[in-house]
Length: 411
Image (cartoon, rainbow, N blue to C red; front, side):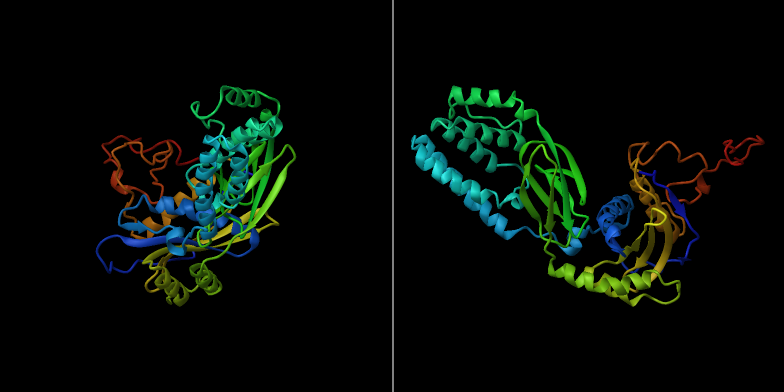
């Protein structure tokens, strides 16, 4: 993969911002319009990076995409989780009465419900892990050792550190868990290709963030895993992922919210106005979007994949969302993200737009840490992360011809 390169092309428009209309922080957010399916995948990640940069500025209250577009829970998954929790308690009661036949029957129904609940299991694998352990114990008691081993393998895939209650389970069963954990099957690994429609959803495996769709999640333990997808503007989705030594692939169609449907209907007109060279008139589509989302400022841009050159074009503008007035805009070309440069480059771009639109005033939040936001190169050419010269920091010349010279200016 090519290293990321960011080329700042000439500024398309840059106007002085209007005087402040209110006291208190301005509500601001980042919105990117994908112009093709490939760009659709990278938009949410880039919006997240830009919002991180906005959070470093005083005078703004950052509204995240999930606040603007919603991120509702899956009500059916929530209901399945509730039924699964009740089923586990009833199964445990039967197990403690040593009615293993009844416990098995109830556990099978419980596990069937919990297979529909991964979208609602956002903090831990329980009650799925507890029910899986109990099912393994029941099968062990009923003499089906191989079935018990398979259930224990699933348990260790879901949570390798899940503790078995020594007061509830027999020593023989706990020893069986140790035997499975040290066996060859427990060492097997597989990988899963995770896709979504639309792309760009956050991927969580066993409640651990992995990246954005489409992506390949490598070296997963063979067995069951919780998969959850989150994309602002869509209902949270999930499924129980069955990992095997053979590579697997899954695609989940996300369900949009009503807010997102209304937002999506505005995107064509918004993208047309973002790309317009005219800087004098106010952008009514942008103003209408700002009103609908409750924003007073916005970073609004378009993303376009250019496959012939292997680059992605980002046109990013800073807008007064009340009037639609464009306060500044930059076009940049992005090439890959092999070394993770995308985050730092987008931070620098955001800082440039906000600093320039505010007349060059430094707006970064002050920190007690003297190295906060420093990367070791800030002072090489007396340029801050927003691209503005910090003239106020220049020292007075005291007759030394080398005063203020760092040796790199003429390279």
